[in-house]
Image 1: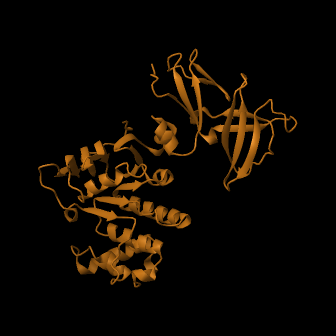
Image 2: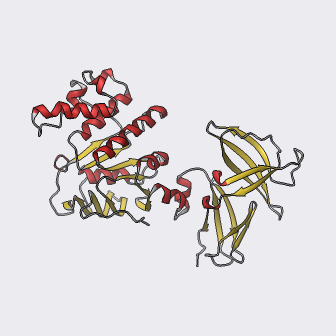
Image 3: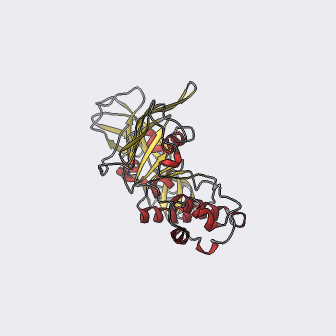
Length: 368
């Protein structure tokens, strides 16, 4: 497990320390340490069943702590054998995939529902302000059944944020929305969270969503955090092959280190940090492949050449057959911005953006 350098505060908004959790004999969380600073948006990212929702429920108080401690603003609020502060006394806002609005209350009354601690004259203005920030001010008098799914989710977010919790917990709140609406609501939500300065823990299985929303990401696998860092660090400085593949398609090659180098079908790669004879896994993002058409007849296959090209909208996906000097071939994918549709058989020269090439010892092989 690795962590990036993050700003430190006297009292983190949330600190999870040594959290272990099991359902029967199944350990779903295995020794998690996680800190969220005031005003920070942290994303728990990972595949289904990796333990991220269980961690969020422990932070919320919906699951009792079995092992470890939970601290909010520097105060311990949960731990085995200690007082377990219930969710409603944690100054925590909750929003889930389903909006769960009160059907008999108007939009405005849904948002003001948790504001009984405020003087009556302050409740509606605060609710109306949040509805305006989330694009729902014109719907304040409507009822949930009169709203679309996206509108209901905006209201649910406003309701959770209205009490101005010290910590916001979001469990896949955008996953049930269609892609275009999801992008807009995510953008609106991020602006509101940053405007209010609310520390946030967002659970998602979508790496693009995590990169858009998060100041830092904690990527989980099998109940453990594999890497914690900024979106840049996880995408460009991955510590494990799992991190590379979780953020999108990669081309995978194999090789062996000789004299600090690896010979591949697309050229020689440096690997001075590995011992000679180490078997390695080479992982290359499609956008790392840069193509230049060669002025050779179509069908001249002594060079690397195009198999087919597909336009995906903002980018083109080019299937390639790469030829090494030793005669080896590899089927690779290149992702090129914009419209780039070379003909099948077009000979090409392949150059690499080495910042998007990652080399790891294969399982059983040891680095220096």
